[in-house]
Image 1 (cartoon, one colour):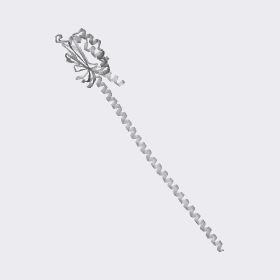
Image 2 (tube, one colour):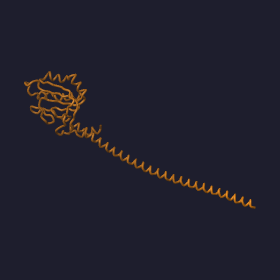
Image 3 (tube, one colour):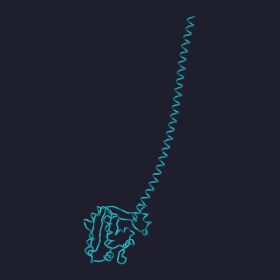
Image 4 (cartoon, one colour):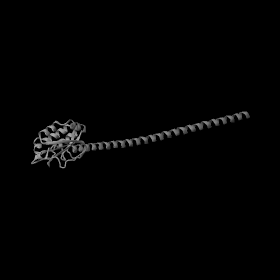
Length: 233
């Protein structure tokens, strides 16, 4: 009887221990599940914040791109206006180029304006310089563009409605290689006018030429056409 009682106590003790172990494991597993749930919730929260942050950064980038596009468009307009100013000679220019000086061969010759204008010598020289690399040209500090008038007015020549007198100094800026080649090989036209008229022409390459902008406004008869041409480029 005593042995049976002891056996029951031993079995009860073992069962109690087993129940305690099972309960402890259950509690531990439950805590693990709770911890995992919390971890998942935290990860979702962090992920959600990251997504919001990325969206905000994307919005900022989109805004920056839009601003850059506006700035680019504004810069493009500025470039077009600047190009138009150059075409109309409203800006000073500086660079390498060529200078020509046309004068009477001696003091006895007197005023050379009449036959210079009659034979369109200045206009012909301007055209020849353009063909040979000149981009910007002035005569006696008068800027030449497509609106410039070179005409005889009494005993002198007018350019841009401004009287000029000999000697005529022509400055041009442009492709220095072409201009140098033009000077070195010699111009048939310049040789011809020096052979037929009492004038002399001196040419010189210059690395530091300044051509000033027009002092007066152009007669902008074709202003709209020029603006349209620039927009099309």
